[in-house]
Length: 319
Image (tube, rainbow, N blue to C red; front, side):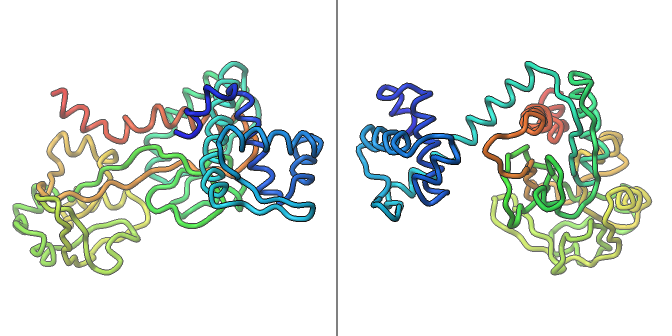
């Protein structure tokens, strides 16, 4: 909102330049260092800061001949300005990249299920638009830090954790509690979350580490159910096979078993209880100038991946 209100006082390009100068002064700790980084003389840096403070009507920096300190107002504005500049750089880079052919290697890290089922057709279509682009897809269910491991973009499912990276949301993965009809005919269908403890539980490694499964009940209230692990794996395919074979009740991402649900090979258990969606993010190294290939693939995934994650919901609504 601060930026929008300033549009009638400063031209957009002047405003972005002043914001960029301010951000670099804060990050470099001084006017001279920021000027060297931006290719500006110190008088030009000082003038940009004066213009910005005058139009904001607030003092952003306390400065003397030796030190520069950020005021309380400056600290608040810095966070907004940083986000705005990152968004502007990303927007500009994405448009520029689509107006020219990308070349070189795009290295993408992703978890197995997404990387095996959903990403290949999306990346293949992107590559058709940019034939000079080489795709290097690395599949691994562990967290891949793009800064440490040298990938352009890492797709992260679940908690982001700590690290020096920029994160962009790509939607959420719906999960369901499932079993085969033949298993439920043999063992009975649980009528409450507490009854799950009597059934063997099939799950991905890392889920229900404490022996408990967390739901939202029919009224939206949190529900905790004890479970007894019988099948655990770090890959989704053996879990799907175990459920189809009737080895228990388990949790799967819905996009990996749409066909099995549609054909009745798997059915939902406790359908009035919902597992929280897992957030999906694209993360990439922080950079003053976002590489065109990174901006392109992130924008492409933000547009095309979310509908695939909830395709079964869309089909149900239109049926």
